[in-house]
Image 1: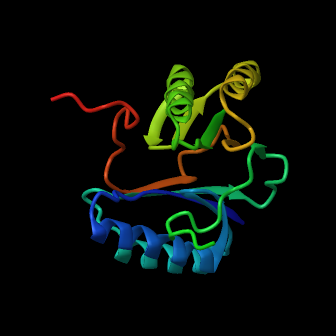
Image 2: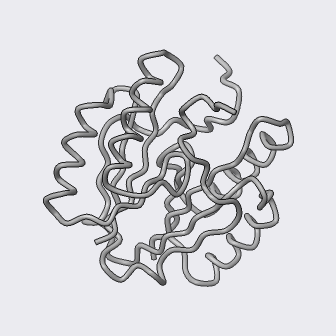
Image 3: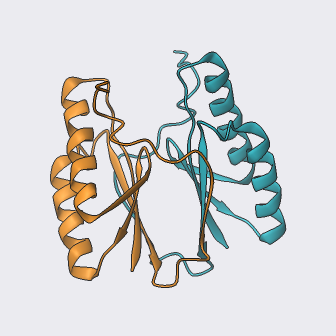
Length: 96
Length: 96
């Protein structure tokens, strides 16, 4: 099934920036980044549980948040994108 | 039906910051902010079309993006939130 993972991580501190990098890195193991804080993951129930446990160990629940949306199996017609393609690894410094 | 609207707006410029404020303000007319760039809207097909048209007039499609996810009518069991509650009007300056 398609599960959408969205997150807000407070990045005013260095530890916050680290949490953001870790959350994004963990999500990359399970899915595709479609916007800065939005990942689409094709997972089964076990994988989703693994991802949830991993992410919940990373975040600070007092200031950060995670949301999971189970979109289901038939998702082709349920998603619409407009505009620019997602940036890659937005939390990393750009190296030219 | 529940429609999730997620957006990335490039805010390095003043015009980008303006676009972000306008996108958030327009989304507030149709739904509830659940994360910085994520709104949940309970809309019918006509309202969704209105929102889409309005948002697509605001964004710069070369650098910004919008995504719409139709979650459907039975959404209670499909959404899970972990951690902090959403900040309010994060794109506005804080006034104490």
